[in-house]
Image (cartoon, rainbow, N blue to C red):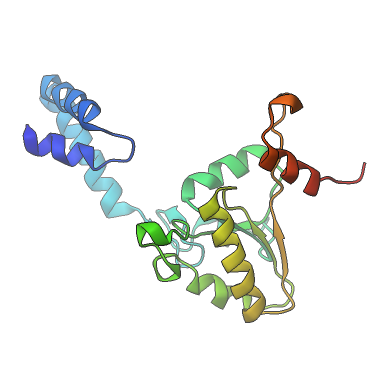
Length: 194
């Protein structure tokens, strides 16, 4: 039981109490349910891999985004994690392809450029001056540092690139009076003509 709890604690967002609850749930589950869970984990590890072009999690290589004839292959949205793709796809406003970094720069946590999946992005954009790169990292200190670093590296790799950053600011449905100064500043910087 202690070994299972320790393994469950390694999952993101799972602390000691949650790991203990999950372990006891698994213990009380039927043998079939426990076998189904372990089989699902084994299949996930055996069948999924990273796309050789964009680093998205996929069961085919290259992934469906990278091989789609209906997507603009010269419009690349750079995201931190594969989970960000789903949020962008929900908007139904993006018809390009993706590049997944699998993290952000965080020197305090020992994450430098070498730990991110940047090299194949630089190789990819060298093939054409017509690429537009959208940097869609989070508006956190780490996300901003990553976007700045990437912009510099991308300009160095291909000076003809069109590099943009997603707008940030006041969320829809919220009240301006509750916006902090950074959010309000970003909203003003990202304003657009009507």
